[in-house]
Image (cartoon, rainbow, N blue to C red):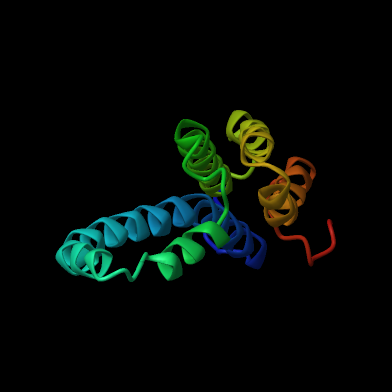
Amino acid sequence: MKNNSVTPALVFLIADIAVGVAFILLPPLVISFLLLLKDIFGVLVLPFTFLFGLAGWSSDMSSLDSVMGGLTPNVTHHPFQAISAAGLLAVSGLCSVLACAAPYGARVERGLAPVFTALAMVLGGLELSFILLPGLIIQLYALRRPEMDFLSRKK
């Protein structure tokens, strides 16, 4: 029996996984852009900094430093961990979609999806775990109800 309908639980699960991947990959992207912006402005302001230094004025790029200091400090320290967590979430979403295509036949994918999500939660930390918790609950409940039609009664 093939499940041709897209259930709201599957849509919510995929949206939750997409938000989790964005939560992991967006801060390093923003910090990299800010570091590039700081380097560009540092080069552009260098002659004026030298002249202001000769005049006795000190100017620094404290505003851009304060913006970068307010972002998460450990984002750039563990890029392999962030990429691994994002990859595990992508594989988890793929397993969930494949398991929904054949609800009573894809037992391996249905069983692996929550395992990959849990590993991504461990690698991503506590904040990511709170974001992915509803998706993990849906994946665990899909082990019991493979058709992912949670609102209807079982006949």
